[in-house]
Amino acid sequence: MDMNEKIYPDSGVELKGFIARNYDKVMNIGSIGLYKGFIKKAVKDMDIQPDDQILDLGCGTGRNAKLMNSYLSEKGRISGLDISKDMEKQFVARFKNDNRIEFINQRIDVPFNLQKMYDKVFISFVIHGFPHDIRSTVIQNALNHLKQGGSFFILDFAEFDMDKMPSLHRFIFKKIECKYAFDFIKRDWKEILNKNGFDIFTEQLYFKKYVRLLKAVKQKS
Image (tube, rainbow, N blue to C red):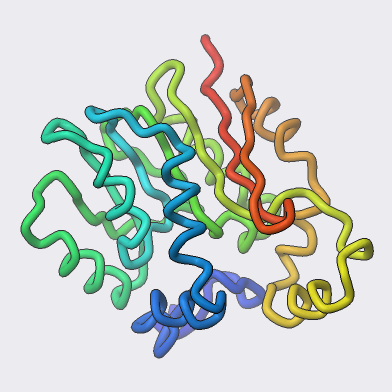
């Protein structure tokens, strides 16, 4: 496959070129400066413990990992997974002096085994960008790498009826989001996760309830 080709042509989460190289700046500008405070609040709501071992799926530049790292002790660890070379460069530069944080070039949409178990698995605004049949693979990867009783955190769009959105919000959503996102918001994610080995759900809602941090706990075997 050509390095510039998308794995999923209709996806909006496979970032390359200028956007990938300047992703943090693009997010700041696109959100009128709101993203920085929002992501900080969402990470705080994860209730990260000092010694947590965290797996960050689709870690990007490491911006979220840096926020999570601020809650960790010397025993805490973060493994960030991504396949973008542009993101990898930024991630590695951000943590060049911290050996507790590692970058792994790994697709999250295919089965993998890191030979390690984690307390928390986190994915932020990535899973909505996959076809639905691929999302189950991402969920199983999370389940297979969680310790018993570990938590899977999905920070992404909440479930909502796009036709009931204010016209401006609906216009923006249709303009900036890929077609997979339209499918994502219609699904019952608690039910989907429950069928894939998770229970005990809690959620935090943001941005007029259009965005959600959904926590799901790995079921006892």
